[in-house]
Length: 114
Image (tube, rainbow, N blue to C red; front, side, top):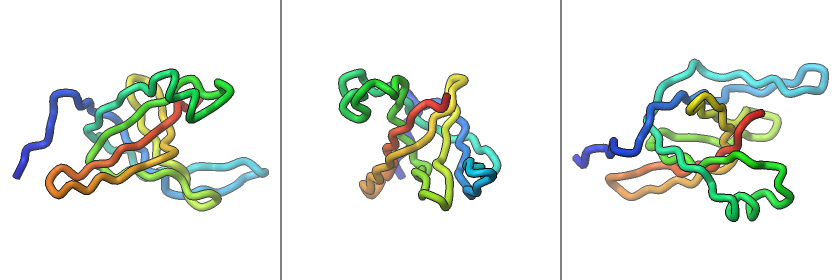
């Protein structure tokens, strides 16, 4: 078994989206109990951020690498998973699964919650 890399990983809080309901037309998100996971959090460079979000409305987004499954939300059904890192909360909006046999992991893009 190959050991998990630890060098550039941090302990972060994962808030798994559970259900999404609406109250007076506004979304109400519920989450499973928070868990601590290991993840590498990297800022998305400005040029790439502008390609993802033209117009500059999003100014704080990150790439998250982890071996824990992360999920974007499902409209009207469940909220996006959230990661709490360095005092900020980031909401997952895109996930890629990398199945490599021994080093399976997930790459997620997430935006800061204001």
